[in-house]
Image (cartoon, rainbow, N blue to C red; front, side, top):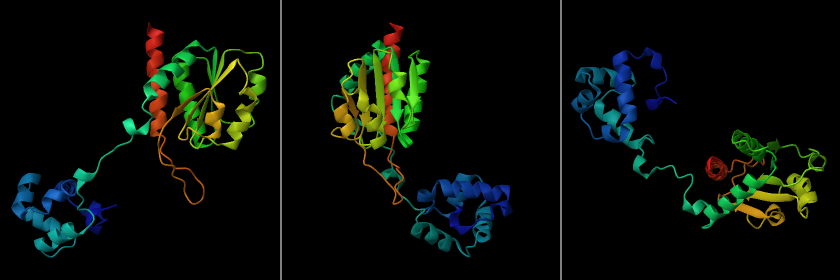
Length: 243
């Protein structure tokens, strides 16, 4: 979106674009500057600044500054921050849980990562990273996948499940046959430690993130905490494998 409502950027000269970039990148400072201050900081002349102001539709410099002060472009960026993951995103014992789970994966013969919908992409991501470490891993995102047949003649298996709600019906049906199977360890990564899938699992890696669903049902919940868990497990495994 163009600043100042000015969209015809192709009509601006190189000098104009220099001023444009300086102003749009320093809005909070420019609102308190004089023409010559802008000119000095942008390394152009004062007359160039005034020509630019006229070209983008303002008759006078005070009019230009008033626009900057009153528009939503004038944002206090000091209040903005990117806080995706911190200690409040997980239970206090998350580190010890991660070590236990990484050790289970390390000692397993087969790992199947499971996820439906958006969580299916995370299952594939986790499988690829584990495979890169030499772990025998298969991703499954198909609710009709013949998982029982696949694991029929295997032992020491891990089902690593991804579910935001922890109540995915398709995933529950897929892992239900293995709940009491001593050869299969179910591990889930979910935002709800009290969910159905969490209760079916031997180990739970929970995270705390507000669920965000659109009116049409599409899930836009942040998956950043899940990515952290996946990559932390990989990091622990890498250390184990290097020793």
